View: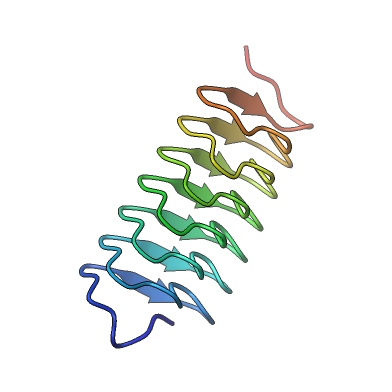
Length: 122
C-alpha cells in the first residue's frame, strides 16, 4: 500500500503496491495488486483490478476496472476502461471509453468509444 510519508489526502489503497509511489496525488482509490502503483500527483482516479492504471503518474479523473485496464496510461485524463486489458496501450490519450474484453487495445488518441471483441454498441 501507499507510503505513509505521502502528503496526498483522501486516498484509499488496498492490495500489494497500490498507490506505492504516490506523493501529492489526492482523492484516488486503488484496489488490487499494483493498481495505481506509479501514481505520483494524479488525482481523482479509481483503479480496481490487477495492475489497473499501473503506469499512471499524473493523469486525472480516470476510471479503470479489470485486469490491466488502462495499464499503460501515464498522463491520460478522464478515460473510462471497464474489462480485461481495456485501453491496454493508451499512454496519453484522454476522454476515451472502452467496455468489454480487450476493448480498444491500441487506442491512444482522444474522444473514442471502443467495444470489446465479444460485445457490440448499437
